[in-house]
Image 1 (cartoon, rainbow, N blue to C red):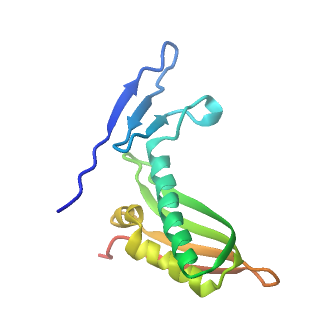
Image 2: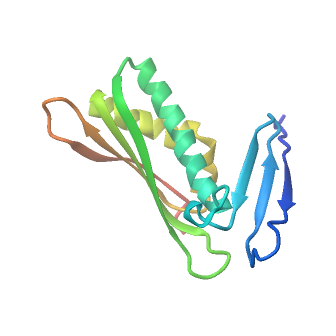
Length: 164
């Protein structure tokens, strides 16, 4: 039986002189508050826009998977950063048309362990990746730096909607 999740979202009136600014406060079922804003942080915004949050969720979801799998494989990670880059359609609804996820890892990690961990996240474990892959192609790449070795760069997986 599927699991049902519920959250609530409330429009917050930003006040006089706010122009077209919009703010939304969402509360998750687990009790966390999330703020969304149409302004950037440098413009005084209090949170990301909704589509920005989707990319952040993808990064967080896959990072949790990959870090967990690398731990189980007893790989020593000194640093781990994810960079997500996405292209957006010019016309509304301005959906993402391509996404690239780059896992930047340094440590005593083999390229094959990293590649396989990313592949498992992209194809089997990360629900955010699975949802997005239904509508947009995603390249899952890695950049590995090990002590005394040249940087290794590779494609771990490509996911996306079926061709046709």
